[in-house]
Amino acid sequence: MVQTPSNPDVVVVGAGFAGLYMLHRLRDAGFTAMAFERATGVGGTWYWNRYPGARCDVESMQYSYGFDEAMQQEWHWSERFAGQPEILRYANWVADRLDLRRDIRFETSVTSAEWDEAACLWTVRTDRGDKLRVRYLVMATGCLSAARLPEIEGIADFRGNTYHTGQWPHEPVDFTGQRVAVIGTGSSGIQAIPVIAEQAAQLTVFQRTPNFSIPTHNQPMDTEYENLWKSDYSGRRERARGMRTGILHDLNDKGALEVEEAERRAEYERRWERGGTAFMVAFNDLVTNAAANDTAAEFVRAKISATVRDPQLAELLAPKDHPIGTKRICADSGYYETFNRPNVALVDLRATPIQRIVPEGVLLSDETLRPVDSIIYATGFDAMTGALTAINPRGVGGLPLTEVWAEGPKTYLGLCTVGFPNMFIITGPGSPSVLTNMIVSIEQHVDWIVDCMAWMRRHGAVRLEAEATAQERWMEHNNEVARRTLYPRAGSWYMGANVQGKPRVFMPYIGGVAAYRQACDNAAKDSYSGFLLQMDRAAAQ
Ligand code: NA7
Image (cartoon, rainbow, N blue to C red; front, top):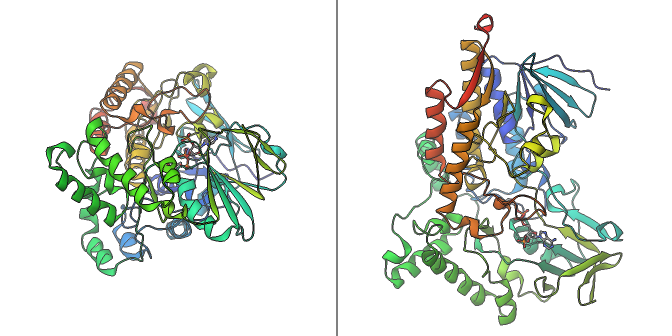
């Protein structure tokens, strides 16, 4: 058994981008902290998602920390959109540069956390037998970290190799000469399929819902572009923080229907050629006005049918059941083109669902068997809440989080939840999180949380808990802004729709990073309004 670490001020769960920055800020602010990480290394999402083709859909110049000028000047990205190996190298570089590893226990999972009301402390236990008593618990567990296999019978019966994109092996996987199945066509499937198709003898894609995808037109980093960013990196970062998505995009403040068709088409074409998810900000009403949205959706559907040679296949690949962008928009490198390859086939699961997995492969409802050597599940995650409910902390009165969130997650500002004092969630449900540049949102959360802890220390506060009315108001506001958009129309993982039995609520806050930051800052300026504080004057420093 590993020796139990001494009791620090804070336990941080997770050493992805959130956990790393949290450790750094805590140390700077004079708090002691210990992070527990189930992986063998840092990087979170980018540690686990090593599937072929894994790549960030936010441009590299923006998908990195902005808190340290020297670091952001020094790091060089080799591509416009960085791939997983490079992002993981970056996370490791940051961990070394800031000497963070000494406060991280790797290959250690937090198994339970229990609030002790009398002592105002959390008791945290790990699978290595650690037991810590700490004032603060910070869940830096990530929004897309609980990988899930689908509810398909017979998965364990399969004789070949089984993979999940979110738990990809560390050693390279060679599909040469194999018959491969990919189940799932979300971002992960859409990125992996073109790469695997180049290797496999035969690739069969099992599609339940077609997704909209925009080409990245990824390319090596343009030095001029990099220099331009670096010439005023901090200024650009500051502007990005004021954007709805935390990404400095080429926003268009016109509505799609305010312009003539020719102008609209030209705008979509320009963005399609430029590549990437900035396509979704071609007009300012694409996620709020169904008719406007349809012009963008129609443009992409036309691109699909112009790309895919077989018209029947093109039809199957064209999404029609949700407005574009209301399921996470995908960014690809040659996805639709891949279906022109002779070794790639598509199975439409809407027409012929999977009956079960059998030892030889995938058995469809019409009794046809698709024999394969490997099955790749690109079936996503128990998003936003899965990693939290897996730990299932017990708050005031021993109530488990799963019970408190039985009807869906409820938070105040996405940061705290009633009944769980001194527990902070980084990019939790009710915060903009997955609708934004995650690193921008992480930095904002971490800064707010550490400032809050420092304030508590200065004022002798030993306990902070979200107020029920503030939480209710925040959730109402969340639902109201979500209702003003088209997002709730899609059965997406934003809505919990991909997990059987998960309550259907729109989990991320869609009011935008800037409005959200303002709400957080207002609460802090107002001596943490919306939170109940318990003072212990003797503890004031
Ligand atoms: P996603 O986006 O949740 O995609 C999962 C895919 O798997 C999606 O196409 C699902 O179809 C499909 N799926 C899920 N369960 C099944 C079953 N039972 N049968 C067939 N197909 C199934 O996960 P990703 O990993 O691609 O991406 C997650 C995020 O990571 C992404 O948005 C980026 O932010 C990064 P469905 O649409 O539910 O019909």
